[in-house]
Image (cartoon, rainbow, N blue to C red):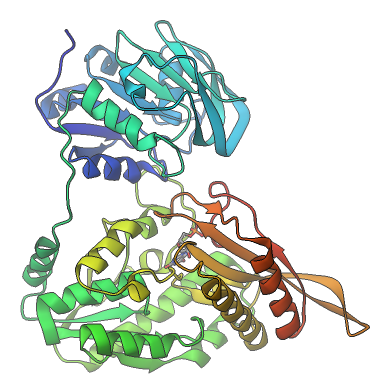
Length: 514
Ligand code: XMP
């Protein structure tokens, strides 16, 4: 009989995947404790932790790379079940004398066909379903004792099993929401293979509030607010914990959506009952961004400016010790949240902080994903028009204008943005799509308006579905809505020659263009 640990614990070997924390999240939702560990963890330490199962994450490395992360081979003699994802699976194949080859890339959705469904790990799955892949290397020869149970059109060994050793290898990512039966596979692994009890967990809001109370004591907190879901819920939680010791600050950078300042004032009056401090800073943002076209530089400039202005504001109020931000987990991971993950973008509320910040940080939502944050908001009584608000990036329209930003391009971007939102709302689609916005592409093309040639800028349209930000697919909007948006932008926004629709999934493309 297979050995089962009595510990409600699965260790996640973090090879640097962008979705590593999502594995932890899936397990947490099932009531299973999960701990991220460095792959070089010593065997003795694994034994001490006594986990019921191991999950090897994906990661950006190739097994052939110098210094590619690896594990101690003795791990395969511990009689602990292993679910190995993407790089994790390639590593197992490599270590156990299978063969991995480079250069057979697949990104995004693919069909997985199962050969048979005898394994418990497949309980409840259909014979064919959609999986998401994001890989450059592929296993072409299996190590001894492994057999294929599912393939995609490109990858034969997309789902493999070694029944004796209870090792499962998947080339796809079961942890992402766009993989059908992905959560089911992780649940089956935890419950049916590792023998863990499943008891779905709920978020303890009182505990979050209590933690803030203890952390802040009698001090004061300035909270950076933008009118978005994350910062509003952060402010609400802190407000519940410390009341009038909270000072929400909204910086009018001029880079936000039109009407944002008024929305912030309304939300705080209605739901948080504290008047926010408004700092007018449009001119300084535009002047610092003048001539800057590198996306990372834009982010850094904006991030530093925000922090500088918050620090300045904090100095005006006696007794402020903390700066609160609405950072959520996807911000952290995409700004290089773990030792081995690649840096994708410097999300300004994470990457732009100075080393010597004069204030201590409070980020009560740092461990949560977007859908969890919305749940917290709803439980706290916020209405759908607040909790269902589309996320908006900290650097605002600056990363939706490719190339350098001028007052004129910003005005065009904001006008086009207003049109997109109006039409999406009018069509009743606002709550269905995750984000929708235009991009000033910086490319020029020819149009004919009123018999005259116009050589104007091309606007890109990015509208997509997602729930936790790590993966996304473009929204299949009715053609007549797309047509309406396109017609209105070309007609109403001066100097625009055409509108194109972005039909790229994430991965590989990020949601924002910069
Ligand atoms: P990407 O483009 O990385 O976007 O797929 C994921 C989510 O994050 C938002 N985003 C940002 N948010 N600072 C932020 O606060 C940033 O620099 C930033 N870049 C992207 C983006 O709008 C999407 O919701």
